[in-house]
Image (cartoon, rainbow, N blue to C red; front, side):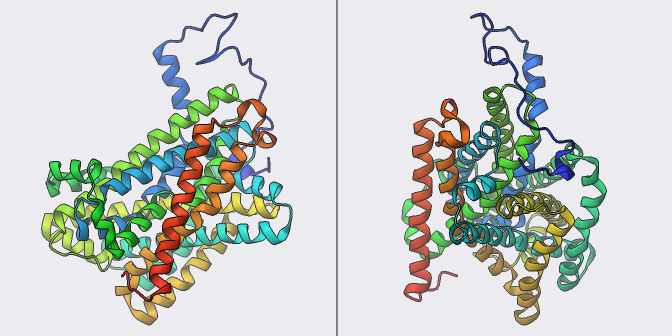
Amino acid sequence: MSSRKWFWGAENGSTSKVDERTGLLGKANGVAPQESRWQIAKKILSFLGPGFVVSVGYVDPGNWATGLEAGAKYQYELLSIILLANLMAMLLQHLAVRLGILGEIDLAAATRKHLKSPWIWVPMWLLAEVAIIACDLAEVIGGAIALKLLFGVPVVLGILITMVDVLLFLSGIGSRGFRPLELVVVVLVAIVGGCFGIEVWLAKPEYPSIFRGMFLPDFSIFQEQHALFVSLGIIGATVMPHNLYLHSGIVQHRLGMEPPREAVKLATWDSSIALFLAFLVNASILITAAAGLSSVNSITSLEDAAGLLGNALGPSAGVLFALALLASGQSSTISGTLAGQIVFEGFVRLPISPWKRRLITRTLAVAPALFVVMLYGEQKVNEMLLWSQTVLSVQLPFAIIPLVIFTADQNFVGEDNIAPKVLTMVGWTIALVLIALNMWMLIVQFGFGVEVM
């Protein structure tokens, strides 16, 4: 396990040899230990944190672009896609937890270890970097728009400001260790969730329509190519490939606190709770757009969405939207920095400080954002956001397939810790379905010249 002292704190080393017979679900001398609910709750609370750091990637500005587009154009019909994507995310993050705790290795390092030839692992590394840059592009744009909405800062200047804001934040908070960073992220996610909870209350949505859209979807809608494009964007924005690298790395911060198998259960509780809250946020974004922006039919930009929500639901709705957007961008940038650090160190096997990682990724994300805004104007920003999320969806199988393979390989997790066959089968199913949908989308978009936008 590589040394990442900036966010690991002191080096943990290997998992401590805690007696596997004791613990939350273990046995001692054939008798299950009796633990109070408070003791169980304390154990779960001690593991809360990494899942929330991962979850911010599920509520980043890219999710907003796809969720607002889906709600405005298709009302509640694509809520089922958000639910499906969230369930997929829970399973995949569980596999990432298994690899990190039972294998004591992150996905990037495992991929490099398994794919010894540079002709194979270098393209895999570059694809992972592209996914992180695509994610960061959404955060750059979201943060710049939030600054414009709240303080009137021009988008171009806001993009440049995003070059330095998180560098200062990371140097201030991140140097204090990983736990304070987790708490800051939880606060930022709570701000996003609270803002959209109020938005839904103001929007007064049709609750029967929410139920039908989530559990009884109209599959005929997917005959429309744009609906498929937006759906893939939702999946790409929800199940983000860099989160699989991130989670398998930062969960190792909990090594030695409990026996490995029990640690997997507790870490899975952590990620499942966090992802359920992320699901509520993403569903709230779509529901708000469906209830408040249905007459618009399509969203041209996040800025327009804030204005339209303010007109439809009152001025406070626009302010809440902008505040949540700023908190979302800042929190997502933190998780993106950590993911980039894990990916670079795992594949290249060279340590890199967070501020250098932040500078590299953000520079590569800022360049296309500035180019598009300056050449085509701010009206193209939302289209760029949608495309960035589709890039993430295309990259997903390249992260999922190795993850499924490694968690079912005794060379990585040990013979007794291989993932159950049902999890492996579902993981393969998710990967194959995504590959098929992505190929379909690419053929439609580029093979026949059919416009999905």
